[in-house]
Length: 302
Image 1 (spheres, rainbow, N blue to C red):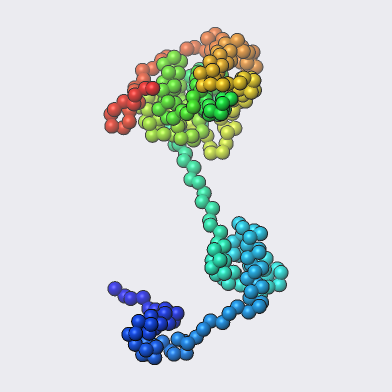
Image 2: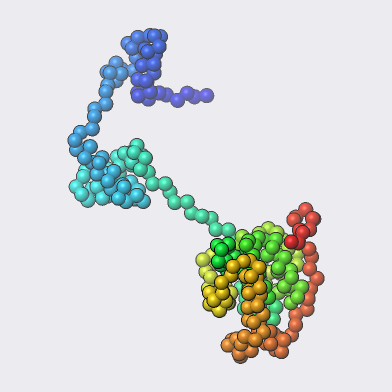
């Protein structure tokens, strides 16, 4: 294995160590390590007044612009008339611990769509789902799952809980499918509950295709966003929800009112339930397979 050669500074330190431990004299150490005695006696000069002023100004600019790297700082110094190169600025900033750490970009997880982007053409063709967040008066978090039929505007699920994870979301999706039939497509964002392995496996086993919107593009799921705006304006902003039980009762009443008596302008001012029952044929319910964990074991319902 090839040994790494010592630098002059490293050889000076080694000669000092040998001399200090009494192994040999400094003259002999320099001869053994092939270090010139002038190099051994060399002492670094202290910074000049100009260098101290430059170093102070560099520190001032670095603290004034904490996200600037050494290149912009070197440009600012040269604009002020200092004769300085970027490598010197880089070395001084490293010595002073002023190096700007690189921004760590978060890798956004994305689900893989299993169907082409499509617009709902009939009842049960495309469902949309998403979450909306709120809180009770006592400060407890509320997370509300929304599942809508894109064609009839029916709200199949409006479930409030403190936390909703992938198994909980899957349970409520199964309940909606058992009551209304399975959709051909499910449109959603790339939330962790919607792209979880458990969810992807179950949808594939039951023939439900997925349509994921682009990250940072909520307008691609505009029906849910529009419903959430009405829901917040007509319910959440008007009610004081003290407990989770009270929230579930109030939100359940709003879902029933939205589906049945409330007229919808896009449906000819019919309610979603009336429109679905009178103008849309009922979808044929399908048999559902229980969700599995990948080893053949079903996931227990809550």
